Length: 260
Ligand SMILES: NC(=O)C1=CN([C@@H]2O[C@H](COP(=O)(O)OP(=O)(O)OC[C@H]3O[C@@H](n4cnc5c(N)ncnc54)[C@H](OP(=O)(O)O)[C@@H]3O)[C@@H](O)[C@H]2O)C=CC1
Ligand SMILES: O=C([O-])CC(=O)C(=O)O
Image 1 (spheres, rainbow, N blue to C red):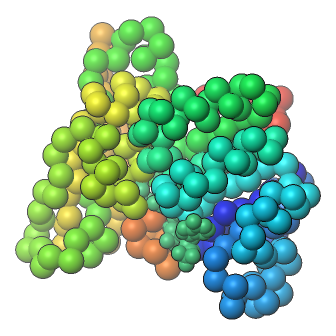
Image 2: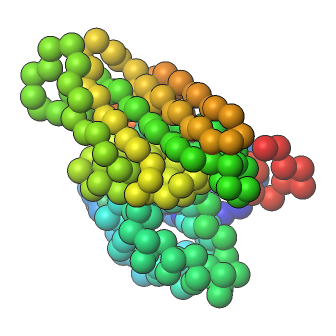
């Protein structure tokens, strides 16, 4: 699989290391990277062996089948449509962009029309299989996620113990915390939507992990998931699992046997 990557931050570099250097998926390689900081091109291309460019047209013209977005919600807004229009599959990790229902529908319709796939990895959480199964059969009544991160990842304010920064629906949570609560939108897409999915965001001066606690209820029963993620070394806001979930999505793309 020939991959194009948008964004070369924390997750982007993790993917370059995993695919191009460590060879975790032997048939997949990041061929081209689109990024804005031209001054790092030489060093990065020597380290990872990819072609780096700052012209999006050149990026799309390069020999790639799938584009991974690992940048920002704004980058999804800017580039996702064009990527699909050019007949490429697309993997989005800044999935909070899809809280915008108009954009979500547009990308879905466009990919159906072009015969391309859009992949939305589970990111820093799990349990989406449970939500999808129960939602499909009308068995899902409520979904809540409580996210607790080290205080400095969420706020500049001094926090003594813990401070609840947000308590409300997912669509508003991602508007206020676009770099910290993408998980609430993948949860919404799998379950009850961004208006009915409830979110609490807590800045905690006592934790070093990114902790997500999910609770779902309905006639099917009750589901609880508590995940304590180690953060990535260079961006404590982002959990290591988010990067791992992209690798897993890539691995499953063409497999004959599907688990979960
Ligand atoms: N779905 C999930 O569960 C999770 C999602 N995320 C999301 O994943 C994304 C990546 O995370 P992470 O790698 O940690 O973030 P980083 O901030 O480490 O890296 C993002 C990179 O994207 C680049 N970038 C920003 N805008 C653009 C653009 N328009 N075009 C090209 N490059 C751009 C930035 O470069 P520059 O220097 O040019 O600004 C930066 O290097 C974020 O949106 C984050 O919120 C993170 C964790 C979990
Ligand atoms: O990485 C995490 O734990 C969650 C996160 O930042 C996000 O959902 O945007």
